[in-house]
Length: 275
Ligand code: A2P
Image (cartoon, rainbow, N blue to C red):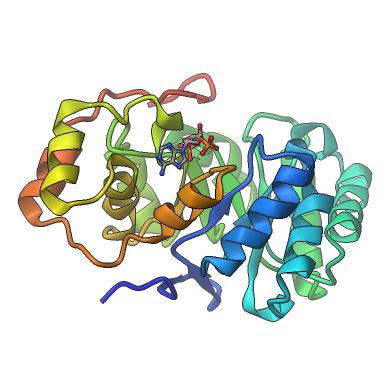
């Protein structure tokens, strides 16, 4: 049975909590507070990135929460401009320094398109071997990017692929591909940036379960063992998004939600050549 402590296993032997707090566009004091409130609400997984420019605030929120560091799974991501080898090393040093951590649980290649990407990957591999990162993975990768730009140049399978995912963009072909390789999917913008919360089908299912549309969208992901990273700057919603363990979507609900797929996301960031 799923609960707030539920994890999935990564292909490197580590465990990742299914529920994480997403921090894109959560800035300054809001970020410090949001991270603290998420940890107080029971989240044990925080997702940030260099490009979010809030690693220092994430670190502060983590310290403010009083939760021991080793009980929290912390992810950051290296940005495209930092892919060349020397810059990648400095970026990791800076991430750790800003977060105030000795190690990251997960560090991701944020974007697949850059000629220096594999230099960054090698820096991540070495840092992992040195104990400064526990797991390494990628984000925004499509099947095509894996096949053409990544696997021809490395023998190592990333632990995760973090992608936009929700019932309005279900991406089954990409998920099947990652499943086949042992790559765990993390879904960002699981609430479709709050743009679809009034969808009548979603609302009907939510009403039947006495839950909100946001809670149904989160539950749709965790029931499929997909790591889910909802973002909110408000304590009430941060709590609500973690209150998803007292109901179950049945097979019919899941089928109905899957049928909402529009074949594209609300952010819809995908490299050229996507399929
Ligand atoms: P806010 O930060 O003001 O709470 P996503 O996780 O898909 O990126 O969506 C984030 C958006 O969804 C933000 O605009 C956030 O607003 C909003 N949001 C987060 N949680 C909820 C919720 N439980 N109900 C309604 N809107 C939510």
